[in-house]
Length: 208
Ligand SMILES: C[S@@+](CC[C@H](N)C(=O)[O-])C[C@H]1O[C@@H](n2cnc3c(N)ncnc32)[C@H](O)[C@@H]1O
Image (cartoon, rainbow, N blue to C red):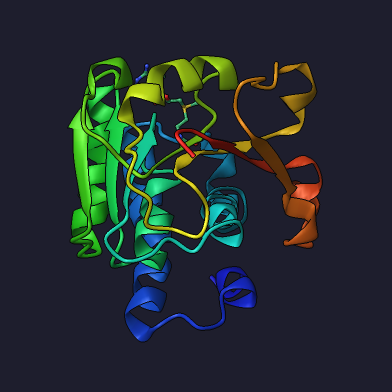
């Protein structure tokens, strides 16, 4: 939890309480329904919460922005982002119902009111959003094909609408989209911990 304050020092008391509550909630839910590797639960704040918040080092979502988290699993990056941006709306989608249940239960327990959930394949989701965020779901090219239909034309943010994903060191093997403006941010520039040495945020403009 101190780790989150190290990089996001201006949290409100409510946000601090919400972040602090995640440890017990995820430890409990993860023992029943596996949403993160069991060995990794002690690294929850570094590997999952702070990693999710890497997106906030790239963009400050304006209030009433609509964001879809594609393949949210137990709620990453959607839940940490929803805590950090309480006036932004997050729609968390996953094709596995029991994972959506964990995300729903955690969000309910900490009183998040800016999140909605849907158990479906993202291919079936027809709503429009300003941004789609995603971590560890599928290669960039496949993501772009699926979410092109979901990106709204109306712009409300400093960056044009598009896709923002968290990627690991495997990025070298991924084909970069040729038709879309793409910017890669190194999280090692933002966070000192070794875990972030190879971690990137990839931002792809769609309808910019
Ligand atoms: C490796 S997990 C990552 C979960 C979460 N984003 C995280 O980082 O902890 C990938 C998730 O993507 C979901 N997924 C894969 N393809 C999907 C699709 N087409 N539509 C919705 N969810 C999908 C899977 O059900 C799974 O929960």
